[in-house]
Image (cartoon, rainbow, N blue to C red; front, side, top):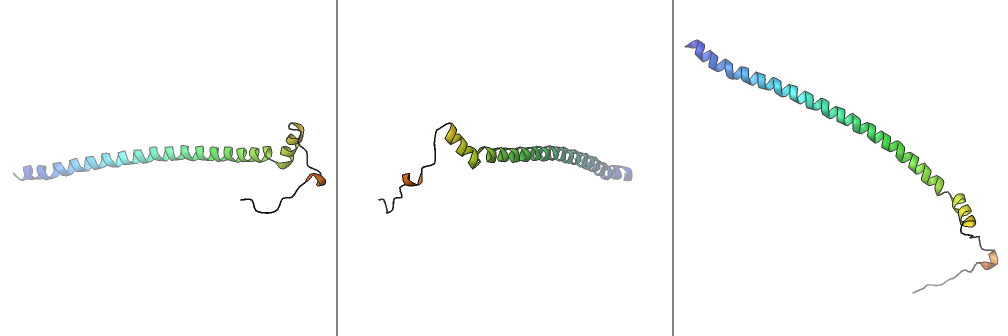
Length: 94
């Protein structure tokens, strides 16, 4: 009789212990997977930041004032107006 009562007490505890162990293993596995994904995303972020820096440098090169002025003169035949060609307007336009 006592052995039967002990079995009924030990069996649920043993099952709970096994399930708890499986849960711990599953949680560790998921944590490792998330860490691997996090590291991959960090590498991608770093790569994108390098690309962004290159694009900003390229944009500043293409938009540099001397380059724009040279293209305006060569391709569009635009020139700076002479001092006597400049007209200054004053007053408020409604």
